[in-house]
Each structure stands twice: as C-alpha cells, then as structure tokens.
Image 1 (cartoon, rainbow, N blue to C red):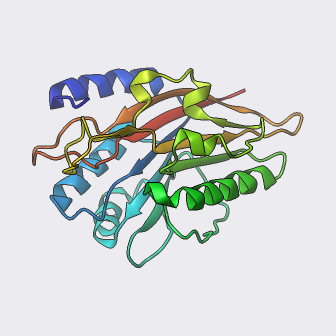
Image 2 (image 1 turned 90 degrees about the vertical axis):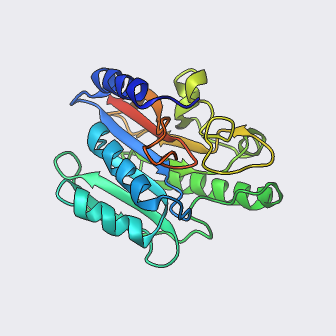
Length: 251
C-alpha cells in the first residue's frame, strides 16, 4: 500500500538502522520502468535518492534506458561501478559500490528479454528462460556464491514446474514469506499504470545459490523490504514496480 513521504521516511530510517551492518551484503533490485516517459526526470531523481539513502552494495536494475543511465552516472559514478547490459532500447544495469565490492570480471549473457516476458500467453518462454537461469546458477564452481535478482514476471505455478536444486533458494520463501513483501507489482496500490483489471503479483524475485564447497563461507538471507512505496512530489511513484532491498549474512 502507498505511503505518505513522512511515513516512508520514518520507515526507511528504521529499516536502515535494522539492516545496515558492515558484515552483511546489501542488494537492491528494481524494475525502474524506464520505458514510461511520464515524469521521467522526477522519477530518475527519486531512484537516485533511494540508492544514495539505502547505499546498497549491489544494485540490479531492469528496463534501463539511456536518459536514465546518463542522469544516474552523473550522480552515482563516484561511488558506484556501472555495468551496462546494452546500449539500444532498454536493458539491464548493475551497480557495484566501489568501497565494498571489487569487480574482477564481467560478461554479458544475451537473453531474449531483460526481465523475461510478462503476458500470460508467454508462459512457456518464461519457464524456459527461468530454467536456463537455474541451470547457469547450478553450473557455477562449488566455491562460488551466485545471486540472481530482477523482474521475472513469473507466476508461482510456473516456478513449480522447474526443478530447483537444494543449493538454490528463493529469498522471500527462505525468510518465511513475509506478507508485507509478497507483492512487488501491485496495481491496487501503485497507480502509475491505468489498468482496467487490478492485480497483485510477485513478479520480482531474488535467488541465492550458496557455495557448497567445504570450508567456503556460506551466505544466508538475513532481511528484505519493499522500497518505492511512496509517491514523489510529481504525483507518481518511482516505478510501477516496488523495489526489493535485501541483506545477506556470511557464516
């Protein structure tokens, strides 16, 4: 449900106090809906404000477009390394906090869509792509920890058709399925899109593949919260999706 700016600021302060710990990895994933041209400058400023306030170690953004990336680079390049997934149309972008994460190497893997595909009749394609994601996560070396996050557009019944190894977990499920974090695409609460039929779905998900080699530190889900729940001064939300801010502990 939407919040006022004052309520949201109080919630963010509380969440930061609870979540920000140096020994934990923090991650923000968000479909920023860069394809929506309405109030784009204000929404881009709102996005940067969230990133600066939460200061996540890793940021995974979907539906990025060139006007956004130029705006963000001016404001965030001092603190973050940018990894762009493309140049034309819309694409994904990863930000890594320079003081916390060192980039050793990167490789762009082509996908037909940057956040799978939304419509119900594309169910087969979504399941094929999700299966490919799980397979690639599983193929990582035993001493690697793998994180996947983003707008998957997956429905629960589709996820159930994919065999997911025990080493891979859904963050929301692992944390006890908190109701306040269930719906990341909620057209009842989020009014950015004029939808004839209202819906609430868990499109945005985070998956963790723990390192399985003996003696290697194991990363465990610690907390999660939805962000972007308040309207900006322009009367719109930062995106039609809520973002997911989460933290991981290391054992």
